[in-house]
Amino acid sequence: MYFWNTKKLIDDLRNDRLSEQNYKNYYLVSSVFMVIIMFAMRLNPIVDIGPSLINAFQSIVILIVGTNFCFKANGGNQGKQFLNRLICIFLPIGVKFFVAYLLVLIFIILGFVISARFIEPSIIPVLIEPYKNWVNFFISIVIQVIMYWRFCIALKAINRIEN
Image (tube, rainbow, N blue to C red):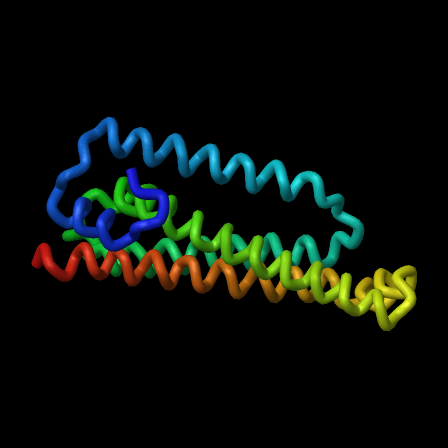
């Protein structure tokens, strides 16, 4: 099972080296990963319903468009094992995005800690508040689009050698 090495996973998928148990394990780990992410999102209360509804709508649109692009990248109706492949490649790509997200979050926190030396710390939340929802919205769009783009690249790499 590959948690980071997308190239080796692509090679295994391309050459049909994964068993049904491997697919099941990728599904389970990917599902646990998604449940943890959804739980973490529940810890963030919805304060302003407008941006949250817009974010939900754009997430649904990106899901539909991204899945269709991935389906085409996998060969469309002539492709093989679309869902198995998508679930498998989600894991290493998702782990990489999670690590990148944590690094960005640490960078932002360090920025606030450093700025607290020059600005009264109690003022920082007031300065951030008007932009918080829209920054989260923008980050959400960027992450989702880049993830589906990476999924498409991986599926094209699997499909390219098979044909």
